[in-house]
Length: 241
Image (cartoon, rainbow, N blue to C red):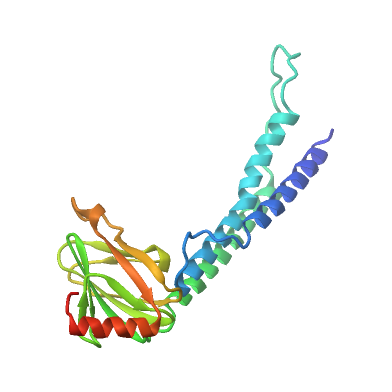
């Protein structure tokens, strides 16, 4: 069998497996929980990157698998014959560089668009000040004067988080919101999130910050707007309750 035919067969197998693999990952939800618009963007990016990686994976699998099956020794050769030297293939080299360059540029453009979408509008309906301290979180709502050890938010509202650290570097991470941002002492950071799904989630520190790092956890409750207003009123009446 000629080399061209081997290549055609391997290419056909690669194409079929790539299509099947992309179809398998397309549309799946990679993040376990999605509770914000930003998490939707992050999950979509994971799906796209996974789909793009499928043809690359199949290229390696098919090249190794086809070679192992088709060109394996039948045991009759006592001495392996030397393979012909390959000096280079100009078309393959140019094509490989061109394809990978275009792929990188397209992924960079897609990532930039996603980053801009995550940052979104720099306006918010609610501001929450987040203070990180070894080893706990505290939250303040400037508009209402409420302070809380738990993070409570209304659904379908764009929130502006102002992040500050009282000691060392921490990282504010709410997996369900798809956000993670370093909290650096002496520097105020700002991130925006639009929460969409009521429920109970969690906030954690994602930066090693000392012996109590693993205990730096806290609940996140997303309420309907009426329930959130009632919570604010109760906090004003019973501070710290």
